[in-house]
Image (cartoon, rainbow, N blue to C red; front, side, top):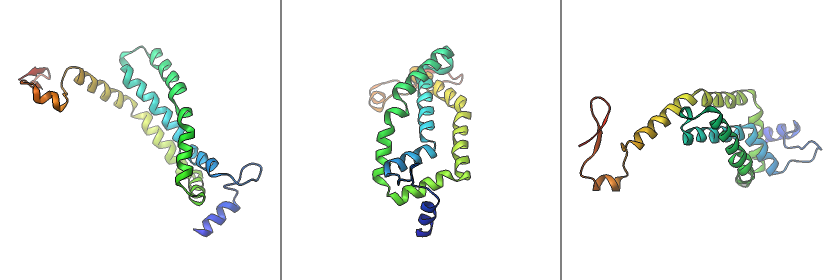
Length: 166
């Protein structure tokens, strides 16, 4: 561990451009960026818009506009300082230096890219699942436990997939 730390410091990690040691806040920012957190956070905001708007059922330019608006108003920028403060407070300088080193390794950078690619590649399946869920929800298939007990009839699917009361 000590040898890794010495190698990291000797290799320039933990040093700002002006050769001043980086603060825990700066290190935490570098770790979060190196792990792809800002990109993933904004991608999830964009996916939330698809879920809320109905995605494929709404004109694509409306969805695109809403995604841009939500990312601008609710995206990473709005929580960045809180995230950075969280990690800076919970990890020691040495731990942050280790995480920075890990985030710079090619195999880890590949993992971050591929995790994001997998998220993007499954977008259509997620959208279909969300649309199907909301259709079933709006059709009354799911009831909160307190409502279900009060109902005398239950809603179920018949052999054709249509909802029927029993």
